[in-house]
Image (cartoon, each protein chain N blue to C red):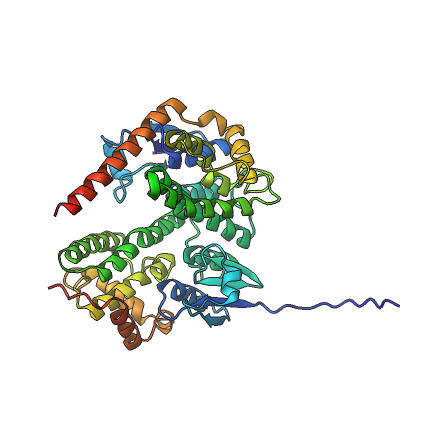
Amino acid sequence: MAAISLQTETMAEEVKLFGTWASVFSRRIEVALKLKGVQFEYIEENLSNKSPALLKYNPVHKKIPVLVHNGKPVAESLVILEYIDETWKHNPILPTDPYEKAMARFWAKYIDDKLLPAAIKVAMSKGEEQKGVIEEIQKQLKTLESELKEKKFFGGESLGFVDIAANTIVWLVVAQEALGMEILTEEKFPVLHGWYQRLVDDAVFKECMPPREQHLSFVKVRFGSSTPSK
Amino acid sequence: MVGVKLFRTWSSPFALRAVWALKIKGIDYETIFEDLSNKSPSLLQYNPVYKKVPVLVHNGKPIAESLIILEYIDETWKHAPLLPEDPHERATARFWAKFGDDKVLTSIWSVFIKQGKEQEEAMVPALENLKFLEEELKGKKFFGGETIGFVDLALGWLGNLISILEEIVGLKVVDGEKFPLLSAWMQDFADAPIIKDNWPPRDRMIVKFQALRDATIAAAAAAAAAATSK
């Protein structure tokens, strides 16, 4: 005899983040989740031995970060940030005005399309080539600085979408210290340097930074055979 | 200044995205055709960072980067939505649009600008990327479902440029047998109302892209010769 039982299950909100401790991309997601006070389970991936779960959740790129919310995966850090903002609507990361939103998306994309590849290149290059990339990065930093203007953060009074994407600059500063380069200095970039200090002092942001000594060692080991440029 | 202006070129597939979106939404706009070898002061003023098309100017405020323009159009004129409402579906749409630009476009372009063994090798990732699109179309007429949406507009360049590039290099890239769904989608998209009236003239495109391929191959050969003669 079939027994029919109705079970109503309240599924607790299940949020998982697959990341790695030194990844600029997965740290962005940690910042966003913490800003919104979202509880999540963090899974540290070993990228030379990717978990079956990661491969299942991101079959296209097989990369971190991946956010899994109630079993549904989202990949690509800026896409994940927008998902988080649209799902947990308090403490917004993006502006509500469509034009302001477009501007935020523009600058986040600029950071990922221009600054980030240049930051990787500068760590991997030496001598004259490195000098050239440093100049390129400094032009990009000037561009970002002129966008920041008088604001406390790119997002205004508090951290926003662009500030989170601009965590790239923190990674750049770690690289410049680890590898003996001079790129972002207070003298050359007084405005951006002020922003940088506020960013790394922010209660939520600093909780999500890789531990500095470990991060410096990591960069030295990964990139460190180049001689520092003077 | 009131109204909508679109800075574009006659051939840019990125600018076409904005054209399609504006027409789907029935928005009146003024077109400014740019000659990229002689950029107008307006273009340089409206897109100082990249100096590229397309740029949408709405009530005097400029927006650059085609996918960002699409989202701005969708958020400003809310009828005939391009993106779904559900946050996870929106994230998925953004993921595929980004995949299209970061992977599909770059890998197909790679096939197009190479020859011989290099071209053969470039085909491998190109076909892998196309396979992901084929998978994504399962059970759907368009990437957006029953009707054209954000991802269709983002990938729409395939509906026109693929056959042009295939004709120039004499290679079949999107084989109807290997990619039945994608081939059908390319046809359905290319023939859809609004879309089909806005393709650039094919003969002009063939001339332009042939010249682009020849120039790229020549430049690569010159660079290789210079490198070996050092």
